[in-house]
Amino acid sequence: MRWRTGRRSSNIEDRRGMRVRGGAVKGGVGTIVIALALAYFLGIDPAVIFQMQQEAGTTTVSSTDSDWQPTAAEQQAADFVSVVLADTEDTWTAIFQSAGEAYEEPTLVLFSGQVESACGMASAAMGPFYCPGDKKVYIDLSFFDDLKRRFGAPGDFAQAYVIAHEVGHHVQNLLGTSQQVRTAQRGLGKAEVNALSVRQELQADCYAGLWGYHANRSRQVLEEGDIEEALAAASAIGDDRLQQESSGRVVPESFTHGTSKQRVAWFRRGIENGDADDCNTFDSEQ
Image 1 (cartoon, helix red, strand yellow):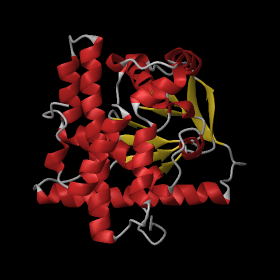
Image 2 (cartoon, rainbow, N blue to C red):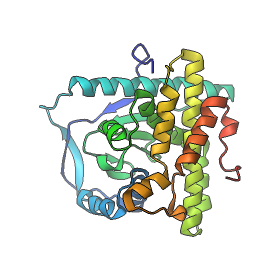
Image 3 (cartoon, helix red, strand yellow):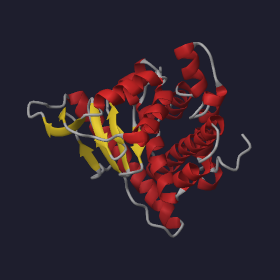
Image 4 (cartoon, rainbow, N blue to C red):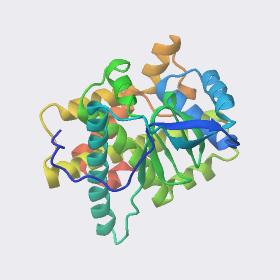
């Protein structure tokens, strides 16, 4: 991916190296819901997440460790994230303007270890996430190592796909899609709730592809093999694959993000067509 000469975003909040001290933090149900969703995303045992929430329930971020300095590799990763975020800003600003709307740019928070968000405390083990309460994307850059080593999805465009997916959730929040899903989920059984979650996640995958389409058309960011990197990442984090690897069995009714095939298909639809109307996963039969 051609990124080094790209514009850096000013919407980066760097909390790396921040210490966590005692204090009262009320995570609540929202924190646990997000934690469990991310647990499915990463194939983590939900019991581990509950334990982490209990341990984090009486902590809060307080101050920065003055001795902490990023390594050259960590700083390069932060620069990369800033460029990708800036590129999503340019892409979505243009798309919203074409529809006569104004795009509200999200903030991306870099953290290490643990972080406090409007959705509660979160651990790096939960992976990247978007919190609609403060309209911020959160990521511990160590996740990129996990993406490469644990999930077998190396490459800078695979990392960009992850960031663009979380920004896709921000777009859903701005458009009211997220609230509509939450409203529709009320009173439904677990399988039906999960099915709506899958459609929401697949739309974020399509939006990530949509960003790739417009970024390349406007700024020629793609290099040979980039699309394959993103498709490999989408396939690696499908619910069916994660469940098979973690427990040896697949439970479709518990899917929250979609199968590997679905995630690949919707990302591909976005990056090949570049039309937001083609990302309406809620009107698709499958």
